[in-house]
Image (cartoon, rainbow, N blue to C red; front, top):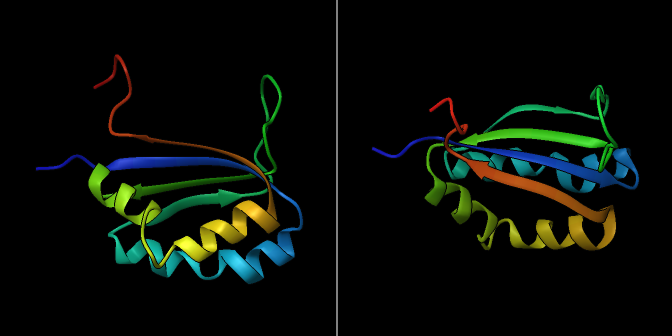
Length: 105
């Protein structure tokens, strides 16, 4: 049986209202089609150390690595991915698909 994977994104959004209108409101249904779900999303994350690489933090879960990758590479997500990257953000995206935490799994 596949392990669930978690996607953590830290994004530099240019305009939060525009981001949510053109991108954010559409993504939950696409993620759900691949068995994924949002666990958290906020623009008010508390920085406790270092420098924040963005102003929007998103955490989601997928049932497997295959489903997570299928979402990212899907035709359904492609136009939104391009819009996010080319118009709505400063192309600062840190995303990590992980199925375990080193030393804890």
